[in-house]
Length: 457
Image (cartoon, rainbow, N blue to C red):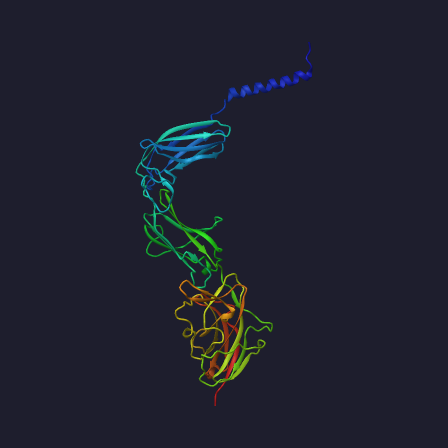
């Protein structure tokens, strides 16, 4: 009986396939899931001296699997985990083990912070290396390891503190900086950083004083949010302040504290040009000498002048008016004397500001002339009280702010009582001043005008 080709051809192919499988099995039988596992040397001394500080863990996976490596202390029975059910591909692996495992505490130990990584205690250990595939195949190898003379003292952080806890990096002179103190119990790498809710990290620079970085002892970190370098500070919100210390063995300890950032941002203000093109309006008021400077001058009205020179009688008032705009995203602080204040020629603004309230970080509008005794001796707040937002501090101090997007008129006067013949006429001008921070290059010589004094009879 002759078989049909339709039946013989598939049968032959099947037979060949089976034969191929048999031959392959005979030539190369299935390899075990887990090949050789070694941990050498079998005695380590993780003390940071560079000699036998770590053992090399070598293993071979022939198929993808999840691996675990645990160490059981033969004397106490305590088990420590180095790798826990971690997925690995099929290949050869080598990794160093220096006795460091995830943080743990021993009986009766108490710490204020969190131990993130720590050396396992002295002793003899039985290690167990296991592998498991998703299909349920398992394999296991065991061996021994001795840990001797480890530098097991933890790099503790003591005296951890932050001040203030509400921080406003905006260069207004109020809570612009945060200071962090930390005391290291042993030599270690110390880092301090802000951690945002989304995981963004902002590192704080250490203030180098008596201690070198990492030395045991007191360390101080000073942070301005980057504002002093014209770097936009972190946005407003709740942050975790983190201090981490890690010693040479790899033990790491963490301390945390809460920190809130409020009113953050780079201050941005300018003297705004008017429709006429000029930035400063000038006028004069005749007045007898001496002037009662306690009497404010009213805000002058009219269109800003574009004249290049003014004449006024000796002892008359040089009056100005301009507009300050806060075009940034953070409030800017200011301080009396408010607009309308009149200065005598020899007055200084320091005699008119509140001596109790710090004026570092405050914004002023200043006036200066060629024969002035100092830089911008006459200064005014960047707005009248009704154009500003008043804030009372926890200490009862009153601060005034020009809010983002707001504008304010500033005006004032100086009694021009002294004539210097070699400087008559003399140039006068205004400027926008960020006290103890900067006088902007584009705002330090605004609205210059020649002023000629006519001597009194």
